[in-house]
Image (cartoon, rainbow over the protein chains, first blue to last red):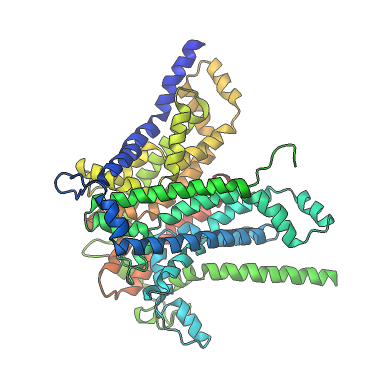
Length: 300
Length: 281
């Protein structure tokens, strides 16, 4: 018996080898070397020179573009994530009933999030919101004199990206829909008997019972919103135009690293991002004590 | 009275939900229909879906590509990348998932935690050193940096397949062990056939992610000979004054076709995959 267990150690490592090797080579080593590069002036030409906290100092206190990209990214994350989740929950609740054709609706709402990350959709989006694009031409048929190039105007540009993100609420919607289906109908019936109206039922039953799923979605969507790249790159033709209004964090990092070869500076940017996302995730987890409801067995 | 009322309500429901669905899908329909409009019509009659004449030549003009590189070549590159990456990601993830789900060994909890952290790690942190590493290995300007890392398991798929293995009764493993089956035999002969649905779900998502992937080809490929479709579409935008709108719209539409085909064939797996693990679509 003992021999078999010892053998299991070896077998376990054989099966896990792809992950462990990949983790060491493609994740752990890069994280650590990224930390090292962030303290150097590395440009990929010649050896890296140690510059201490220079990159961090330059970035945080002397780089207007960096400040701009932080503010653009925060606008993007803080608007797109709550809006996306709100739409996802709302539509999931509307679709959570046995009606003919519901499968078709579900697919229709889900499709945008399936293709949303593609270059084709980003190209489409920049034409939808162009000066002679779909939005304006529809507005014109309603008699509005619309000719704004939303993608190219400073006030609007970031909001076209936010709209593109909110448009892709479908995958969160599917997760919410699965959660809603697992809430026993008897809860709602009992509440109705007690005279609870729709709003009551939403706040006292639906929201608490879905809160673990909301937490999961909130964390994953926040992380991926911070990393958004392709739409900003395509819609701004790669440079964050107009006047850096769409220069999201990942785009600026990419430009610094691969267009200006400031590998050290870009690594420092990546580490600040890692720290901010880590802290934010921690904060969301901590706050979950107050708003996430875990059903304990024997209670319900 | 009550009957009519209910029918009226059902009608209002379909009007609202269907109308909203149509608004959601409208931009995609608009893209597809515009790809058939004559070049000068796309933006002058953007409000209308119907072209004055069907301009199928947009597709042949777009397909012709750039400087001798046709879309036949771009699609070939995409398929090479997608097939190799998807195979690597799913096969390696299935192995790791079995190890995590069924074998108890020293340090498993630690590696499992590493996997969960990897799942939430922003790509930007590993991107630069990976690029430097691959450039030192001489892998730049080839598919290697895009494909090879995929053979080292993807946390999302490990997680999804693990969940699935856990629903298979352990007695099956035990019975096979008594019959003299090794761990490897159990995995290949018993577990692997049973987890086929989870493998299909993983394959579909790996296909989507790799098909749509833009940043990795952008980083590692600089020769248009090797461009996949996603990167080739960008070439349309690189010419300062874009004038081949018809071709751009046509090739954009065409690049979405494989996604739609897979979606309609495997809808059930996709919906289940997202609902059970929260995979991002």
